[in-house]
Image 1 (tube, protein in one colour):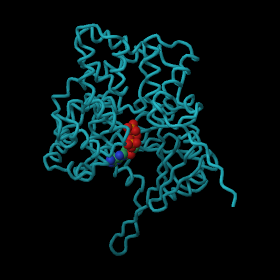
Image 2 (image 1 turned 120 degrees about the vertical axis):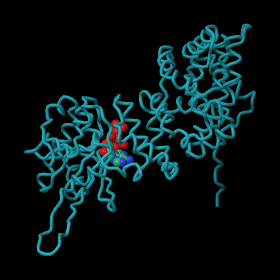
Image 3 (image 1 turned 180 degrees about the vertical axis):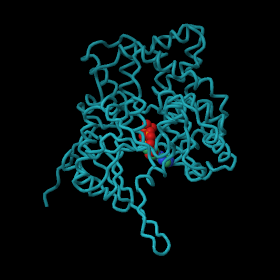
Length: 444
Ligand code: ATP
């Protein structure tokens, strides 16, 4: 049977009031429907670790979609049901959402005279999960609110820092759990416990990862690259032989050094006023691919189904990285505007990798000067101004804006009026296409 403990105080401490309110309301609504409802998974784990986690996953012993509909009437939000799976999301206008799933009640037919036995459906739901630390639930119905449901000793494993699967076939059933085990182990500074580690090694030997769709592989890999410190996770992936399935074209130790220096580079760049990119995984991804040949890099991007813009960033990094490195490291004086032009051939997400590759102090100093002057000399004109001048949106916009940036760095323009004048003559000079006025329809 499950051990019970009450963790309401831990919840109150770890969770913001918005989340507490959702959980409380969920319990009340479930009570009214005569269902039991639980918060499960990462949220429970992180409450016990005193780490913030805002992902609410609800499991309902009852009809999950009905529960979602009733709950949304109380807390607001729009319900997106998935009838086939008995699941639903409640989506709020600010993009936040709550997942609601149905724990199916399973009946076991016993032979002859014995009655049907109703198994706890929550236990079944939890048993399907990846690790004991992720397989805890907390009851939300009013009289049970805060009761920890822990069938598999997740709390003890959490305290001992042990990542443990629930059964021996876990990695065969779902090989993405191998990547997840590594991610949680490194994120929380825990250890994959010995038996689980054996199962991972066995699964890798049996090449189970090759059976994964690239889509699921990428999903988990991207999660890793978006963690606060992916570098140790990548080490571990390599150590356990998983890397070769993710990047068979790339030898880990050839890129290991650059990867290990990225966190430090990120810190330095932030101090230099570099804005964190929206796609947090890209700096690491670019570090992994920076030595790869264009065609190979392209194949990898295709395999993981990256978008056109992201693929371009990868290819630009490979194409221009070396030249940029050489110019910044040149012994002769190079004008700041030229250095800036060169650095700007690289995507911003490549700067961390680029910084780790700069070896001498002078090159680093120059890179810093470029970063600072770019920040300081940001032109005030933008794409909208160009549009207002009547030009068609297209690649010429980028070129015009880069050019005015150069002009600023070289001190040729200073005021906004001068910038506008400069842009106007640049566009005219380059025959940039104008927006065609709509032709009036000829009278019928
Ligand atoms: P994070 O903090 O990274 O979001 P999380 O535990 O919330 O961690 P999710 O991927 O959001 O991770 O998954 C939510 C829950 O769903 C997990 O806690 C786990 O119980 C379960 N889960 C997710 N992926 C799997 C999987 N591949 N196999 C089994 N259970 C899984």
